[in-house]
Image 1: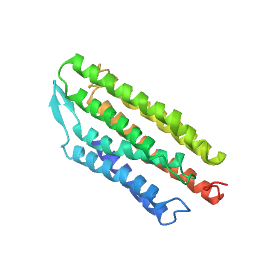
Image 2: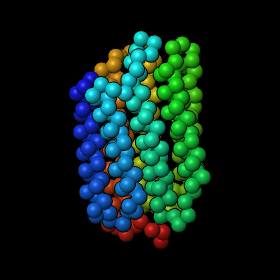
Image 3: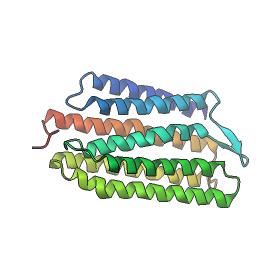
Length: 231
């Protein structure tokens, strides 16, 4: 387990280095987008460092609950949604901040429900709160593929396609979180803590550093082609 946690810390440090390097040559991408991309692995790496040195966990119902994961997710997942929203509205002069707030609220409900579910000793309470979290995730997906996608479609076609690509990637990756949760020690226990830790290392690396690199990389490529503004 320790190997996977330290591996994650190194991956997050690499993400910080990459996005800091890109920020020195932003290629027309606003600095706030680099700040968000850098803040995500900084915050996430810190909490996995806490777990790597033996902290960030408690024993509940004869199992280990990594509360530090939720301290990570409650900040980084809203930031990912803000980054996705900025891509959806990148070429638009007016941003739909009300929609962004709705996404963030639904996301925080999702993360909080998962955390409270992990703290429940009764199976009924655990699965009930898990169901609340899944519903909140479906609301997030509904907002992404409904009003946010419609907003992105108001941009030039190349920008709209970038949003569709990164939204699809994030959606596919985020489906993995409730699946790992329900199959792992928190749910029906098909695998143990080590496998759970490994999966919750690989998936967040993909959904944080790799996703941010894809998002920023596509925006930087459009900037090279001078397609970041409304024609």
